[in-house]
Length: 351
Ligand code: 13P
Ligand code: SF4
Image 1 (cartoon, helix red, strand yellow):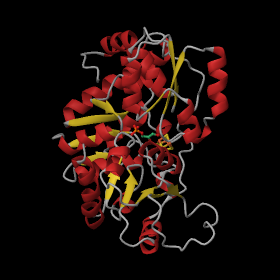
Image 2 (cartoon, rainbow, N blue to C red; image 1 turned 60 degrees about the vertical axis):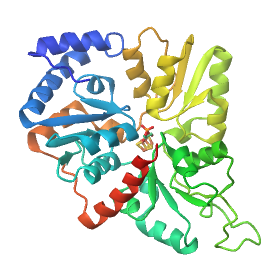
Image 3 (cartoon, rainbow, N blue to C red; image 1 turned 180 degrees about the horizontal axis):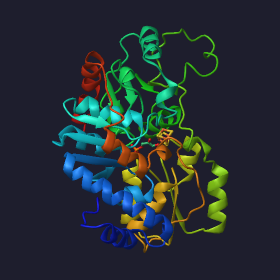
Image 4 (cartoon, rainbow, N blue to C red; image 1 turned 135 degrees about the horizontal axis):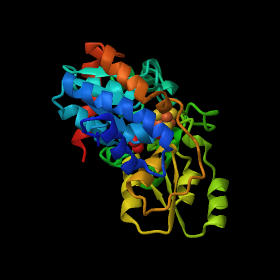
């Protein structure tokens, strides 16, 4: 939660309190000044900051009014009354906030802050899939851009993907764009999945065959695809009592070899609720540091240093510039926004 204090000195003291042992002192000194100025300006301008769980520790613990996973932050964006929303996350997340709160000014501190999953599929790709599989409902992971969301029936996040797929009962569904998330959900729900865009079609199968229960796409998260089953075996050899948590954007083999898999918020809850000698998170590495700051009694193994280059673009300097210069404003054309809103609303209705 944001640090609400009257001076740079008291901001620094509060940051030290929260991040001692996680962030070096020289970094805290520089960042306290930026954090103080951001929090002051935020109040003056009637802004709120939403921060994804992957934000770097000093930003995450000093200026964010709401933190969470994609689902939690979407819910906040849908209900907030603040005039300005600064999204400390990546572009598709800021776009989702704009889709849900069109009357607010939504700012993304970095100009690009993309995502390899969002970039893996276009609206035309979705239209082509719909031509190939007419009448088959389409589910899009929230890690997609607005024009893709506008083409689909419903969205999902890693926090509710299973429930969204199950809401279609026995129907075959198209699930895009994350190959691994789709395969993990298929495994969890006992469904058979094919990837018509990866490799040749199975012999003798007509292009529009509906015998499969899930039809996937070949997108991948450039961060989570890096983790391997060998990484897990190595860590278990050294620390047999470690609890290993994975994000469902990891490969099915990696998820299966772990002890728990869930959204960033679910992983965070699991570490807090489960009593274990030590934990390893196979996900973007800032998250482990953020949990270590909140729960210093928990031993977090820091064996990975895989940082999402897109999340990494969001810094305190840029968050301050964003507030000072009202940049970068997220816009979504109304015709696309309205249709994308339908897909997100249908997701938010599924509990
Ligand atoms: P969560 O919705 O679990 O926070 O994940 C977002 C994301 O981009 C993971 O890489
Ligand atoms: Fe996209 Fe992966 Fe970065 Fe998440 S961690 S924003 S899925 S590239």
